[in-house]
Image 1 (cartoon, rainbow, N blue to C red):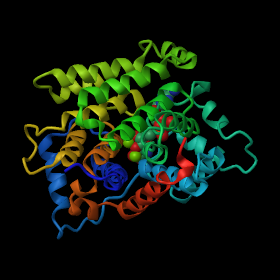
Image 2: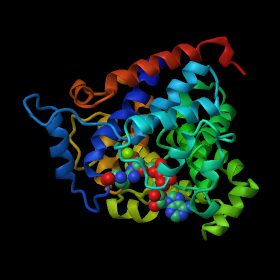
Image 3: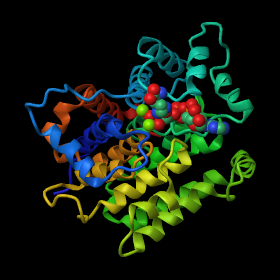
Length: 349
Ligand code: F2R
Ligand code: MG
Ligand code: MG
């Protein structure tokens, strides 16, 4: 039977944390053979292993700030969210943050800062970051807001606190939309799911700033739409190699090279795949496959884990995996609280 809505909410945030913790092992690796991935996952089932629990990184640290802020303020409050990012970074700076975003987080800590969007706008010579840091933390926006328009609006604004390049904040909106649609069961019809994402991104990428940014970076006019069309083409092929996925979609730290890739991982793993154990359910397949792509594995697995967790629900996630990862209980609690808020009338349009 299809999972209930609460189960989907819990699956989304727990799936995101698991992807981050489990994927951290291979972040930055160029070549990750599938047997190494399966060995890493097999170790999670071994209760006698002595290497402790897997730590979460910046992906989860910032996702928790987003969820805490939305829950405390019961709305999007940019000053509150910015303050939480800065405080979290100050408390635990060693969680593997991007080298550019650190400067933003330090500036956001200043009590004299008037415009909390300004530090992000000064990044990379005024061009702003196109990294995937806005997208990796976007899942709570999908859980907090009911309408697609609000999910897009607030996930973009939340990303703009650190990423002012449209490739960065539109990537966050794409990730939030994918989680939002998945929560509603839209992955039951994969082609319609991807078509909906394309039509939403067409609207976003018509924007003047999006057009200027794409031109400045020598990209096609509608960069996310064109990646999503490639996702569709790959879905239609009988077989597709890891190398083809990397060359067509990317596996890098830029949002454009990782958000469509995470979406592909989920779609590709809706069915059993060669090389992955038959006993694996869809969420296990999705996270394994994301790791096997190499590159920005914690973040691609975190984003794919959120979309897949929203589709399959909390019961699809092995207990041994949940027990092996730092921050799972807290993510589960945040998801339950976001569900309660989602059900309140103040979140109605
Ligand atoms: N940073 C990492 N992993 C690598 C190092 C881990 C750790 N420091 C270690 O010691 O091993 N992972 C995390 O960062 C990614 C999210 O990054 P975010 O938040 O987007 O950061 P930033 O700095 O804004 O962007 C990341 C890099 O992208 C390039 N870049 C972005 N915009 C650019 C632009 N306009 N022009 C040129 N380059 C641009 C830069 O290299 C940035 O440093 C996640 O993977 C998370 O897990
Ligand atoms: Mg990380
Ligand atoms: Mg990463």
